[in-house]
Image (tube, rainbow, N blue to C red):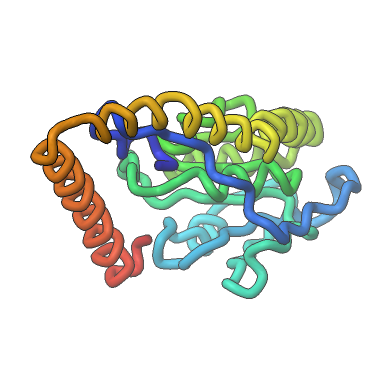
Length: 225
């Protein structure tokens, strides 16, 4: 699984997912105090707070432009100065979601502003490699903070370090460690158990999988996944 909150037993393991291929990183040029500050949201607009209205009513030291990255350009961070992924201001933890957007921002060299999603807290360090907000005013303050050259560079630098921690080599090593260690041991115990216990184990896992699948489909129908 990709979120620790989905763990329901000792046979479940949380392994960071791979970074998404095809990311176009932000241009390496530094932030310019005179340029428009470009922020973006990648995903379904209905699944985030009303960013356009919030920005329209906020007062910043410079012009701020919002882009909603479509499914055809979700991977293009070349002209983005910050990525926003705030689903709500209700403090919801969203245990069904992985930290994909945070990983993408780290790998693309773009500061990240996220909500209270537990997935972000599990891999990131709020205030260090990403900014966490839970209110409208905190979101406005975070965008204003990132317009400072030093703050922006600090988030990019720390995000780059985190991207290395969750890079492909370390993710590969994690998979090998889990598959050749505890999973192999558990399979051996399952293989040597009674037929009844094996069938019960398969049924329990199938039940849990179907519950999670139905939940995802429900959220997709509501356009909240």
